[in-house]
Length: 302
Image (cartoon, rainbow, N blue to C red; front, top):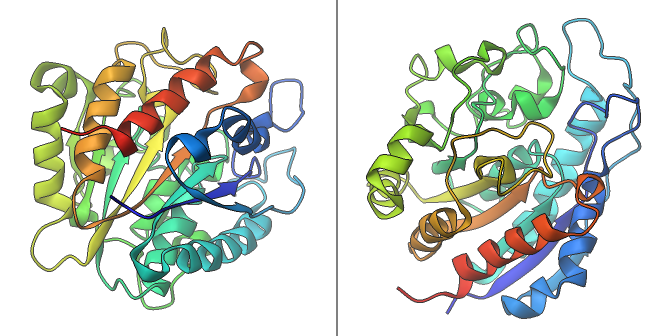
């Protein structure tokens, strides 16, 4: 059984505000999951939170990234804490927060001694825009691109030695943003990212998809892989408490089955969970669904 550690990344600085101009309430998500007893349910040691600086760029900088300086500082801080959490082979579960935290988590893997890693990116959106392409200016809409070094921003160069992940070592699962080119979808193939979209997921099933992911991210020459879960990969009828819900996605059981297969891989390094917004979930029904997925992923036996 894995030695699981829990770390909160209560960040909303990497995502656009609500339409009324207030910062989104993703920073509340780790506390909600703790109140639901998630640490006890998955047998995790709780290491507390890594708290970011306040929101600054309520108005998007022209062709820039919102809160770029604050996001960059936060990612380095988060990387240090996640790297510490990985000591001795522990498996960190990082509760976000917006999905730019995946950059801090993959940077942490390098700091923990993993030189070449894969990335399994489970998300309804490509998140592959450049600062000039993104309509929102949110780091969350560009974070996958930044992991492979795409984009004219310091956030795409967090590690001076090169990109955090090679494009050919990345799989995106569950994407269904074909009509929204603002997410940079056309460039996935150019960078060698394996794109297992939602239609394929639903047709092939989670076990077949998991096998394809493992072939890409845990193969020869790779020291391990990080696993990213964006809550919006779930069908909008299941998970509405996200900023950009999408129809025609998998249900909770399908996502849990996929994650459970990936977590059981010896080369799996850790998991981050992002984009759940308690401000859009007054009765916490969506939180309970997501907590159940995380519990099943980490505790269910095949």
